[in-house]
Image (cartoon, rainbow, N blue to C red):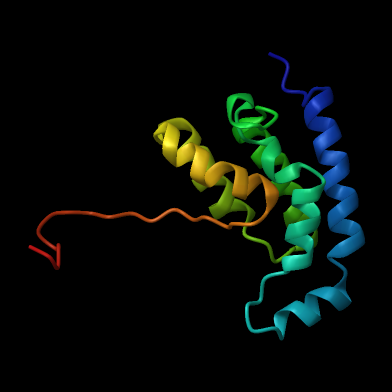
Length: 134
């Protein structure tokens, strides 16, 4: 088995590494840590404008179709700089909608995720004996 990344994923990794290295500096991290949201919205916008947020989404939804492998590459590079952006919840949520959402849900959510305008997350609802609505 060949577990090498391949050209597309290497290109994503290299671009992500460059963006995180240039923008998630120790000074910027200190600045973001003292902000009310503790999220680097400028870095999020930079990732979106570079096409990295949409890269994981299916091609049918306007992405590059890199899926979980692409997300893992992005997360690895994020972890190298401890960049305060919600890649995991937003992109994992986006992939869930891409895989299981209706056409309307995909059309309403995924373009905004790719452009960086929205930051979705995953929520879990469990029904059962501990259900407060029961």
